[in-house]
Amino acid sequence: MDKLTVIVLFVFLVFNSILGQEDYTSKRKQMVDAQIKARGIVDYKTLYALLNVPRHEFVPEEMKPYAYNDNPLPIGMGQTISQPYIVAFMTQSLQLKGKHRVLEIGTGSGYQAAVLGKIVDSVYTIEIVDELAQRAKETLARLEYTNVMVRSGDGYNGWPKKAPFDAIMVTAGAEYIPQPLIDQLKVGGRLIIPVGPHNRVRNLVLVTKKKNKIVKKNLMAVRFVPFTRDE
Ligand code: SAH
Image (tube, rainbow, N blue to C red; front, side, top):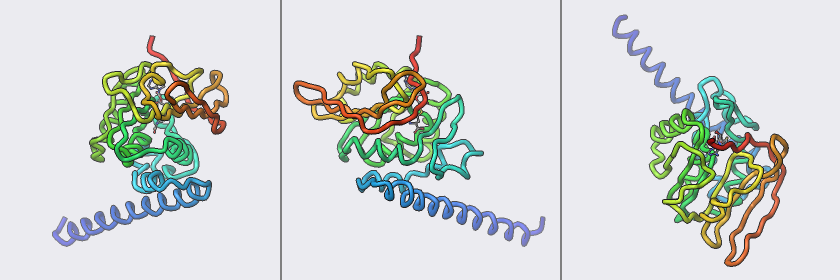
């Protein structure tokens, strides 16, 4: 190749990559407008995070064109990344503050953890499928989410060394609420978890821990991949 061809090729590649990024940015803005704001999500921290976390970086290469669509997507190992609206709804319901420390069970792609990481001081997240945990760790490191800590393992028992948490989010459908997670919640803290019988539509339950009692509220019907246990 002569010099000119190399230069032309280089300029073409640079422009192409800039245009590609812009495309994702405008798709993301459209996603927030049409799927998130239009459905009543108002928390500005949640909107800011959804607008700024590059969702396409968290899905497999062949899913990138669909990353900003209004549905969940497969991420391998039989698991899924949740629909953007569900991510926003669950995030908003935790009423997060900048100084909070949050626990997530079910890292999956790492996308929800990154969204939380944009809002709070520190995020601890546990994934039972080791391959997914490793992949999420790499993605989060590459995108420099240095306040998100990923651990591979069964999240049923939470992360006792980092407890108590201001908020806990479980992103896999459970048959009941694991007691260790309630125990690791601060008084005044909030936990959100999809609960219901195996493989059926479950209820998104918001748990608020008061001084002497636990208050539970059903927020909406949802479908999630199941919460599994290590034997
Ligand atoms: N929050 C994820 C999507 C979660 S899908 C994202 O943003 O991409 C639910 C994940 O929970 C799956 O990856 C599944 O492997 C994981 N999971 C199921 N049971 C678990 C358990 N007991 N502990 C930790 N992770 C679990």
